[in-house]
Length: 307
Image: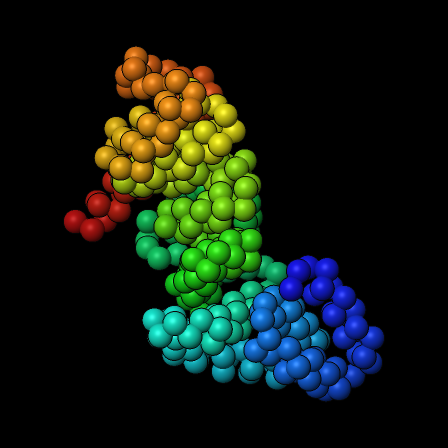
């Protein structure tokens, strides 16, 4: 079922809606039951679910808050069940649970004077404050009550593994809004960008990852992802350079294979690339080398506080 099919069906559904919330939700549920279980129907069912949420948002705020609070109470158990369903290869059921949890995470009410976050460590919170204080202004930073990081990451990873990277962008970009500094999340979003052919976004995503990387393994992965994007764009010289920089921080069979592929395709080799030359070239093109001063400072502060 492609986007045009979904739009056509949603247009038909809209014709039956009257503005009466109870009636309209019944109509939407009826259409959902009609398509439930049919091949490739999940994108349509998601759209129907979003429309139900939109209508619910217009209802009694107190009643709506009660609904959300009830869903928050069961979120951990629902997520656990979704993971079990994935292990049991009951993929449709797992996806349905993860899709509902994602919509609740996105729609959970928040006042305009606050922003949701879902940081996994004290260091992440410090990085957030340093990097984003200007953009959030006076708004209060609040931790999302559902702890959505593992839910959205699992959902995005699941969709990528199922060969549906385009759909994976929805939960992974939402996750990026809630926690834009976790390398694990950044890398997974980059994987979705790469698999959907959005190499510029993938490159910039990895470049941002360098600003948040806190160890050699994280640096290596970011440089490797950037190198892949450059290779796809035909910039083999700089691609090999970044693969070599990645290998400087951590050995990687993948990086070695990519270098071999570039050498066979273009003749570009790592000969003559030394760390000083790589640093000089990175400076020329605006690519930072090593852990950022902000992350280094915050790690040192965190170590001092723990002592």
